[in-house]
Length: 287
Image 1 (cartoon, rainbow, N blue to C red):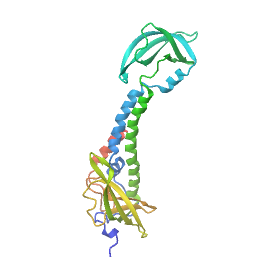
Image 2: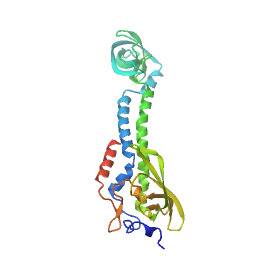
Image 3: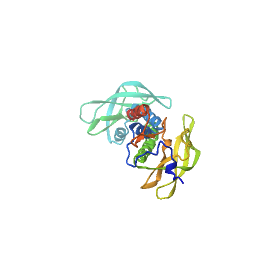
Image 4: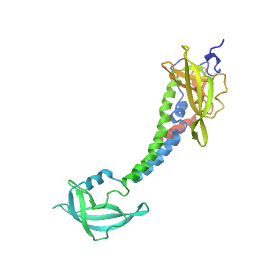
């Protein structure tokens, strides 16, 4: 009677014992994952907004000014609109001059939502001792936008980074499986839909059972978009770590146009793969 590994497809049976070489295109594919590129794009575009808005928000300096006890007379020199708005109300910029103690007059700028003063108005400014350039009119702010807007916008790169890092970490673990894993065959392969989708295409969860070289039986699962390469063999090839059989992976769950094969020397063989390398370079650029 054939054992499970002997029932595996001929393209895998020549695989040498670990450690093995993992082709660079395969590593690139596994590190970006199904949603890695989308996460990198989401992160990159989110960071553009963070940089744009972040350059106009100074929460620490604004806190220092508002909690300073130093107050000086000030005169407003010019007023302009910023082009920004908060809750459909215009944000105004004030350039003013103030006299800190017995020092020379200094110039600074601050902002308010809606116009509060006119040119030539005299009022009070609050400043930070020893850092006199940090000053604001009483009732104004150093921030063009409220801090909560920056926090809200920051959610976008955080979500994008999360979408990227989860498959990246999973990819590192699966690369380790390709390099050090023991090959066997899956049984009782069961397919179900997960709660994820890519471009309106559902991500499938493939649950399976396998037996390690000590005769112990384990359950495993892999996620993949629908592919004709999963379920087309009597025993789908499975890799598991001998030191931790709970970690396993269906070889054909790697999102490749052509499944991994084994060359004449018994090493993993990835046909093509230029697109995978380009995708990884694009992700590296975006991150």
